[in-house]
Image (cartoon, rainbow, N blue to C red):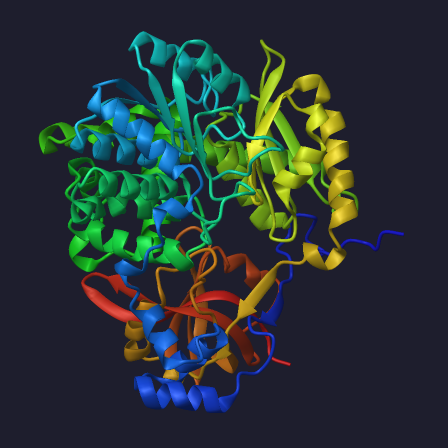
Length: 589
C-alpha cells in the first residue's frame, strides 16, 4: 500500500510546504582535520569546516580547490571519436569545404554554435552557423537544418548540444552526401546515430572521467584537440571560455571538476571579454565587469536575456549577436535581447498565473505525484520556465504542454525534483509521445492532444512507483552552524574562493539558532521580507525573498527563531553592507 503524501498547510494545496532541515555532511567532521587546515591555511575556522565537510581534508587538496588551475584540464582525446572528428574537420579546412555548425535554440546551443564558428573561422574554415526556430522548426537536428546544409552546399554538419537521438536527420544528411559529426551531452538512446563521429561524454564507451560537460563544454574540448592538431594558439582559445562559462551555468551543469575550472576562468575572461556581442549584452543588462561576475549573475541576469531571443522567436539572432565583431552593430542587437526578455517576463507571468489557476482547481497532493498541465495559447518558449516555478511550489515533477488547436498537437517542457529521473520516466512512457529528449532533471517532448490523458496517468503511475513520501518534502541542506559574531566581511571575502556556485557546488548554507527579531519585520518589493536579527548583541540585516506571506503562519516577534541563510553583500545607494539571505526560518525548539 502506498503511504500518503506529506501534509500541507491548512491554507490549501498550493501553500508553502514545510521544509526539512538536514546536514549536508553525513556526520560531524573530525575536529583535528579542521585544526590542521586552520593551522596550514590560516583561514577562518568556519571556512576550514566547510572544506572538511566537502572532503577536502588535506591542505594540498584544499589549495587546489580554492585556486583551480587551467593546466589541469583533461586530455580532449579522452572523449571517444574526438580523433575521428579532428581528422574530418582538418580535411574540410584544407579543402575549403563548406561546414554547417548546427546548434540548439537555448543558451548552451547558442553559445556552443558561436564558439565552434569563431574557432573554426580562426583556423581558416568556411563555416556557417545555424540554429532552428523554436516555433517552426522544433528542437534538435532536423529537416530545417538539413535543408540549410543542402542550400549552402555543405559537405559537413557539425552539431553542438543536439543530435544524439536525431537518427532520421543524420540518415537524411548522409543520403544527401553530407557527413555529420555529432557533439552532444544529452542522454543517448539505446543506439547511437549513424554519424561519422559521435562525441558525447555520456555514451557508454566514452572513457572520459568528466561526464558533466554541457554542449559548449564538449565543443570546447573538440576545439582544444583541433587547435593542437593544427598547431594553433591554445592560449587564444581560452578567450572563448566566457561562452563556455555562460552555457555551463545556464544549463545547470554540475560545477565540479573540469566544469568548475572552465567556469572559474570563463568568468574571469568575461570581465575582459573580447566578444563585442557579449560586451554589448553586459552593458545593456547594467552588469559592471569591474565588479567581477558570479554564477548567480549569469543565471539570473545574462542567460535569461540570451535565452529570450530563442524562447520568443528566432534564436539565430542570439548567434548573430555572439558572432558580431562590430561594437556599433552589436549594441542594437543587445538591446533587442533586452526587449525580448521584457516580453518573455510578461508572457511568463501570465502563463504562470494560468497554470496556477488550473493547478489550484485540479491538483490533489495525495493523488498527484507528478503533474501534467496543458492549455491552448501558451507560448512554447516559456513553459519550461513556468514548469520550474511550479516545481518550486509543489516539489513534484511537472510537465507543461502548449497545445496548438489547429494541429491537435502539443509541445511540452518538463522539470523534476532531485529524487526523480525525469528522462528515465518519460522514456518508460514514450509510447504516448511523438518525440522526446532530455536528461535527469529536464526534458522536452511533442505529443498529440488526444494522448495527454494517457501520458498523465502513465507518468503519475511511474512517479508513485518511484517516489517515497519523504521525497516529496523539500529539503534545506545546512553546512554548519554560524554565530553572527563570526559572520564577517572577511569570511565572505574568502568564501568567494569556494565558487563559482551552482549545481554540484552549492553556495554554503549556515544556520543560526535562538536569534530574535529586532523591531518589526516589513514587506518590501513584491512580497519580500525585510528584518533585522539579533544574536549575542550582534545585529544582522536579513532579507527573505518572496517570504512575506510566511508571517501569516507564525509570529516571529514574540519568541526566538532559528534561521537558515547564506551570506551576501547588499549594495544600495552607493553603500555596501553584509546581510543574510534567508532560506528558511522556524520557531526555536
